[in-house]
Image 1 (tube, rainbow over the protein chains, first blue to last red):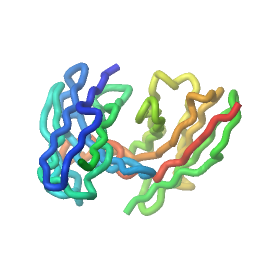
Image 2 (image 1 turned 90 degrees about the horizontal axis):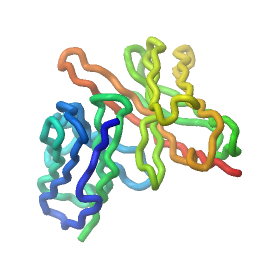
Image 3 (image 1 turned 30 degrees about the vertical axis):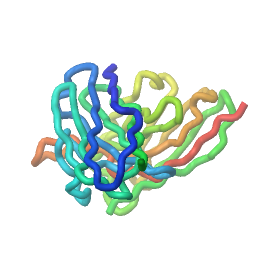
Image 4 (image 1 turned 30 degrees about the horizontal axis):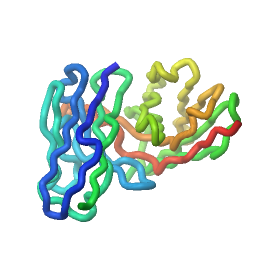
Length: 107
Length: 123
């Protein structure tokens, strides 16, 4: 099974900051990676697919990059509504697997 | 747009069978992959498996022997059964759609999702 390791597990930042979250795969997954945002009590919401493609309707301050085993999600200018938990997902091979999550909190 | 809604008992006794249904509205079920995913504070998000509109299925080996996903396109629904549940099956269960976009060649997993339903296994 492919293990997805996210870092950091939590992050404190301020409105207007630029933040980067990293996801590492235990083996090459090409660009078969998506990023999700989840707010308390809600379902995850997809932000990025195929590692770097922005989901329709998602603000352009979100961007994704990487391929192979290392991927990043960057939020260029944090807004108050961005404080949430973020997850990566690999769908290169079964069983599909998520990272453990990165909780983004207000400093 | 397409919306998904989970339904089913919120409380299941240990050793019994968990049964949930996901109702799809606002779109066709054809040519999509219909997934179940669960979330616990300890284990995080876990993909359970999917059924394609053709009827083919794929399950997570961690649950494979206990899980069945079925489809009823006439009702625009798909269902999850997990047998012999224990406390570790207590989770929020989500349904979600997956697809393959032929023009771009991209797989688009898990969009949209249902709101989720909490299932508690009691002893």
